[in-house]
Image (cartoon, rainbow, N blue to C red; front, top):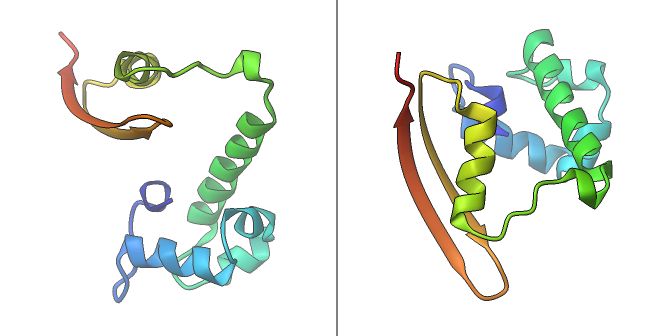
Length: 117
């Protein structure tokens, strides 16, 4: 959520802002159900940030509602990289990292790629 919010306020960094909002609304489900008006009344959220946050939460709801055949199957680090590359590979430069937990394994990887001009 901090990535979506991008910045905090003069007295509160973005991670604290995200944590405060999640605590105030007791998690993502209630935050997603909060009205636009209620969110814009929160310190650190103006209309633009609220619109971006509501849009991201709505996309999450749509993804959760999608059938399993519409979701990518992730079984390895290579699958994660392929999924991220398809979504963000057109960017000129991107640092990515991920952690994935399965029943048997926890793996992390960090990589960097650059688009050839």
